[in-house]
Amino acid sequence: MGIFLILSLRQTADSSHSSTDLSEGREKLRLKQEVGLISGVSLIAGTMIGSGIFMSPEWVLHHMGSPASSLLMWAACGLLAMFGALSYAELGTVIKESGGEYIYILRIFGSFPAFLFAYTSVILVRPAALAAVCLSFAEYAVAPFYPGCSSPQVVVKCTAAACILVLTIINCLNVRLAMSVMNVFTAAKLLALLVIVVGGLVLLAKGQTQSFQNAFQGTNAGISTIGVAFYQGLWSYDGWNNLNYVTEELKNPEVTLPRAVMIALPLVTCLYLLVNISYFAAMAPSELLTSGAVAVTWGNKVLASWAWLISLSVALSTFGSSNGTFFSGGRVCYIAAREGHMVRNQKGGLGAGDSIILFNKTFWLKGGKTQFVHIDVGFVYSSGFGCKVVWRARVPIVIPIIVLVAAVYLVLAPIIDQPQIEILYVAVFVFSGVVLYFPLVRFKCHPRFLQRVTLHLQLFLEVAPTSKDVN
Image (cartoon, rainbow, N blue to C red):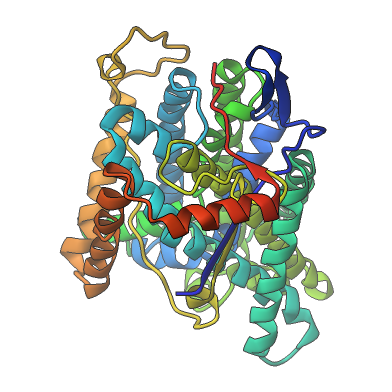
C-alpha cells in the first residue's frame, strides 16, 4: 500500500497560528480561531454536496422502487444526518477540542479505541473517500475533452492526482486560503443546484407530472432494502460532522457550532429534495434507473446545448468537497499526534501537522472499490469525564438514542441481507491496529532509529512538537 502522508499547516512564528507564551520563556504554538459562522456553514454544506446528489438518486430509486418512497428516503437521510449533527454539536460544546470522533472516543472510552479509530481513519477511511471523490472530479473534468467516447483512464487518474496535489498545496499554505476556496466552491455548487431546482419547477409548471402519478407504485419496504437505500442516500450527506474536526479553530464554538448545523443541514436537505423532484419532473422512473449519471441526463434533456454546465458543476462540486475532506481530515492526524498516537512532528512549515495529503495508490491507481463501516455514537454521560461539565447546547436524549439505534441498524442490515467477505477484511484491518498500539503506544517501545528519523524530519521540515492549549 503506497501511502505517503504529509500532514502540515503553516504555523511558524509569523503565522496566524502561533503565539508566544513569555511565562514559559518559549514560543507556544497553537491553533487560532479563524473559522466563523459563514465558513462553518460552508465547511458542512460544501463537504456534503459532492458527487452524491448528482449520481445517488438512481440507486436510491433502485432500492426503494418508487418516486415517492425515494423522496421519503432522502428526507429520512437528511433527518438522520440532522439528528447526528445535533448530537455532535452538543459534544462539541462540552469537549471543545478538534478531532471529531477521535477526541470524543478518547475522552470517553479511552486510548485504545481512539487509536483504532485514528489508525483506520488515516490509513483507510479518509484516503478511500478522498480517492473516490477526486476520481469523480477527474471523470467530469476531462469528459468535455472527449465527446462521444469514454475518457482514457490514464488521463482521469493523472487528473485525480493533480487535484490531490493542488488541494494539498492550498491546505498547506494557509487556513484562510483553504476556507476561502471552500466558501467560493460552496457558493458555486449551491448555484448549480438552484439551476436544477428552477429547471424542475419550470417543467412542473408546464404539467410534466407523470412521475408523480401513482407515486408509491412499486415501493420496496423490506428491512434490508431500506438499510441499503439508507447507505446510498447517506453517502450524499457525508460530511455533516466535519465542523467538529476543527472545534478549536471556531470563533465562539458554543454558538457557532450549533448555529452552523442548524443552517447547513436543513439547507442541504431541502435542496436535495427539490433536486430529486426536478429529476422526476424531467425523467420517468424507468429512464432515471437506466441513467449512468442522473444530473448529466437531466442536463441533456432540459438544458440542451448548455448541458456542459452540469458536468462543470459536478466537477466544481467534487473539488470543493475534496477540499473539505482535506481541511477536516488533517485534524485527526494533528490531534492524534498531540495525544501521542502518531509521530509528534506537528507545528511548522511542511511537516506532520494539520492538513492531510493522502496518496493511496491502491485506491485510485488500481481503480478498486472500497467499502467501510462508519458508526458515530453521540451518547455521553457527564460522569464519564470525571468532572463537572457545562452543557452548552443540550438536545433531547431521544435524538442521540435514535442516532445510535439507526447506526446499529445500518451496520447490521447489509451484513444480514448480503454478507460479503470484504466485511471480514475491514474488521481484520481495524483490529490489526492492536499490533501497533501495544508496543508503540501502550508500552512506548520506540526504537532509536525512529527517534533519529523524527529528529531529522523536524530539522528538514522545520517543525516543532505541538503544545496543547485548549480552553
